[in-house]
Image (cartoon, rainbow, N blue to C red; front, side, top):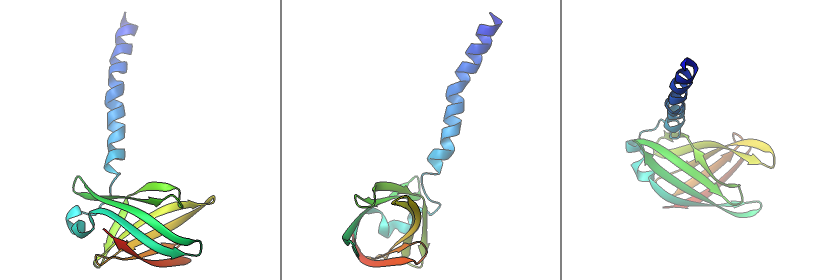
Length: 136
């Protein structure tokens, strides 16, 4: 009987422990940048770049997630959409840093948007840079 009660007590704690473990993951799904600092960027964007392989269109969704900025970026050419949590401002520009898998090689990317619609994609810390335009 004691074993059953002890098992029930520990089993009832499992949902609490699982929730406590998941909270930091949910909190880390957005950046540390306050949404109030990026109001001009909140919304759906499309950025177009000319690459050596032709035109590259990147879809960007920037949102207010509990007062912090959250973004997803991607394209079919780059493997679909992915969450971006490293988001900051540089002057008036919004900078989103993330990594892509380029044929098995992980490459850091910095995608910069200006409020006026200029866009820059910097691969591997300046190894390859593309200039483009972005529209909301």
